[in-house]
Length: 170
Picture (spheres, rainbow, N blue to C red):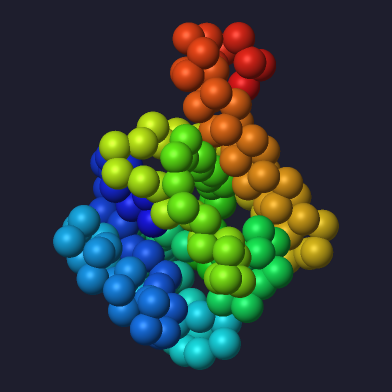
């Protein structure tokens, strides 16, 4: 969710679950100027995927989605993001984040992280990736996202200790 508040140069469309949690997320996104497409791999996914592919093909918006799906396992990419990229010709951009102070919702399937107010948050954006539809490509996407999460965490710790990120070998 924190990534929604990051500065954007283009409009954005986000994939949001049809669940009650998704309704809350949809409201927050609307306040931040992000359009929502509702659906997930377990409900309304095909319709949502078509809407995202149309937005990508028109090149009128960037698409934002959590790639690990509503049922997990957490932090393992599912086929939806890869399918959207393949069908639209778009590239995938791995993004990671780290909040210095946050509440982790341990009861949630994905250990959802809620940054505390006024905390330092780092967003790390990796290079765009061209992927195929194989399991190897999904694992490569998993590794790229994990690398950005680690990079964001290192940068947050470096900032706390007065180091430049370049010193970390980002």
